[in-house]
Image (cartoon, rainbow, N blue to C red):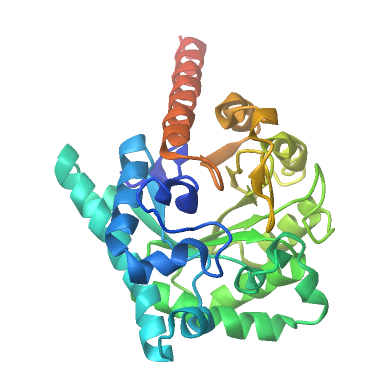
Length: 327
């Protein structure tokens, strides 16, 4: 059984966060964040993937959230061809980690899925606009699609199992991505928005309206829609009732929040002491119908282990209830 056929699928956590356990060079706040290590320290990338697999992740996301052709040209000095190859190599590194882990535990490697991470247009601007979506006022859907296309193409050519459209701050970019996905009709993907409060995307649209619209545009290729890289305290309000009118074609839900800490370019991450552990919310989200769950920024492999334990507890309780109900 592959991960997509499981009842609840556990994702990995914050790649840049865990990567810091293996490197001494700065990661957070740099123009390419963790993506530069695809070039400078691929062994550390493999080790980071392995950390998440050993923690219980069933899906690995490639280290390409911040990766782009122009980003690698401008910040690594590569040409366009080599930049494209570097994005493809991110998939190879994830597959290498998957194979190593499979040998460790005597498992079948393809039970672990590789998701090609596609961050928003703003992730390459290095101005935190990925958390506001302000660029959509002057960047057209076509321009965004043209920018995303080679990233998607490289990941698909390298053999990802699915794509992860993640931390998308605005409805217009989300629509551009799910429309672009139609150019690759055999490819599946999930779509997750970043949100600024209990009801709205970072750009200000009502999350549920945006999610439903994107699901309607391309439900045949989307495996789930949800939220990521937001405070865990917002998740339940954002998801509650989203499928109340969708009995025929409900939206599968996905969640992978950050730790709840705040971030800015000058101070970095702060307010960790004010955060409630992500795992404390897990069973509540599963009760709302979430089927894909993991972590984002500032969640480590240890957090994925704790999330996995909560998923297992919830699954065990559900099986007992179902068994008793059939007696």
